[in-house]
Image 1: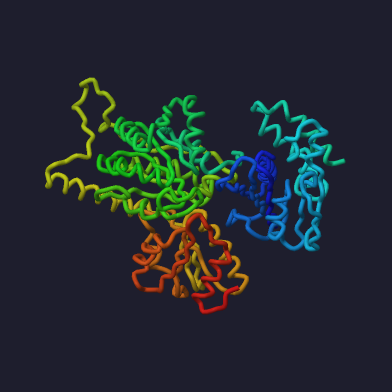
Image 2 (image 1 turned 90 degrees about the vertical axis):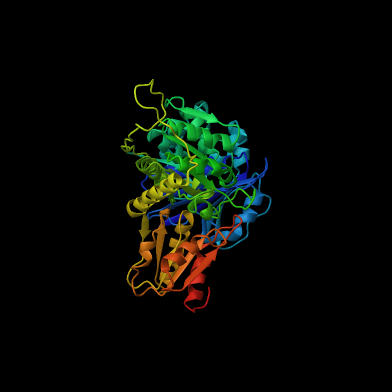
Length: 177
Length: 353
């Protein structure tokens, strides 16, 4: 079993760290994982994305250019760019706060999350990425809430962001409603 | 030991510190910037020296000085920055000093771009600077191997008193994978030759690459090449996955070798058998592997992110026994598995998909 995921959005929306959190959870579950950022020349406010592969076997190419199983799209350009790359039956989790077009493609399952607005209600636009994790918890069997909390605590407890861990958890919970 | 998700660049940095690197001298350039950044944060608590030099030329000459004093030392850069260091690398090779140079390569020539490429193969494997010399070149293909190879590169450098190089593409530097940060015992080098301040307690040592007498310099070069023969005999590394029944041997190194593995899987589904030969040392090149290929192998394909550099070593190794083909992408473009699979189908006279 191999799952190919793209996390995409504007620079600053936290898509790279979101991918890192998901990859770390999978690693802790004993899976093979790769995390590959797009590191081309980008300008502030431009697009950012990363590809995460989770597999039961050793991963060959870490690049995901096609056959995307899960797309986490934080804005409209991300949907436009990666929707044509989706696998049959793939899942698109879109941040409907910032997408403008209804996805009508029949070959994908669409999960709509009003992430930026929910994040704003919770207290900070910056946790919109975490709201998207609710999409994973509600629709997929990859990991549970406790796995996310464990990784958040390990990843951020030593940093100046540690006070923000409760806010991040609150954001995920708000997305679950 | 628990695995940690980390970038290739960070794995190289922490491994170097764990391997006892006490002098890091660098200069910023994408896509290797995580390495000097990491050292700037960690080196002080590790009891070493980190200097962001004023230029690449300064950085490599600081490495020269530290190596002469018997310090485990390292510099890192990316393609055009490595080009700037070549004079210093030649001096270090000429002075028979150990150090590790990491090239997290990008595309060229010139400033080129910051995307991954393997077009520094000639620069890495043919010496790169002036004069008769080689540097052993290690080409890991995943983050764990980056970690392991740093320990090995320092050991080989000190065992043979030679600069060694780790060559990865920007992709591997930037990507994260699980890495087991296992500390390994390191080679304990005899330091009696060092210039480390002897307070007249032993005869004075001199480190130089200068020698103005033909007969002396010729003998030094001959002796150095005896050392290279030893390195070729003892230190050549390869991951040869070609099996009896395979029709095509595909040669690739670094991250692109993993793309080739996907292509081989794709071909297998079509009933086409191909196997990977992955050189782990680019110099010395694992030429011997091509002398004993299974008789089922009728073609050899070199796949690299360049216009065709390693393919020359493949041709030399195959020595006319089999047709050698080439497939490459360049300028920061990366081949997809289907491109390699289609090249194999073309070689075998089967239709592309």
